Image (tube, rainbow, N blue to C red; front, side, top):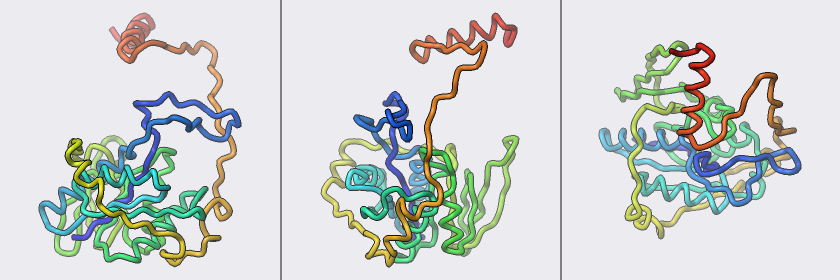
Length: 262
């Protein structure tokens, strides 16, 4: 089974204090610590487990600049065989539809049985996987937390409202968006990262993918970010400060004093 996993380099919320920039149109990105998107990490682990059990290979792919190579190399150290970087000035400012169009061009350059994405990325739109499937005219399932391969098909479980499980059969090739909790991503050590440090990662631009540069990027984006703001504190709201442990203790005491817990 040839599997392509779409990954993204995002700010690590555990390592950063996220603030809005002075223009109010984005977060302040200077000096941020970046890592792989959490949902994508589960998708890569699931791909590796499927290949370990059923054979094939795993390729990781990302749309980004040269700094995004670090995310590809991390996932290759995890066990993916190959990485592909989609990097072009024309891609900058693409919305979800543009990202999906870029990925579609790369998918069509390969021969993949299964394409995996994380359920959502840093902005939480959860749209690229579904758009990519629609552009490819492939079957699609979202919030997948179980995959069982069959003969040219997959049995997939989906997390639905109320904590219930929905099980479907889906034909290959297909696109699946992976939910956290489907597995436990393996630890990536320094030795593994060093092992892939010098592996060549091909870079593809718009012309390599057969894309009109004007069809993607900021100029072609149908969704544009207008404003970022911090919601005003409502009447009676109280902000808890301190370490995570201190905030938890304060919250428990507040809940007890308000009669929320005993």
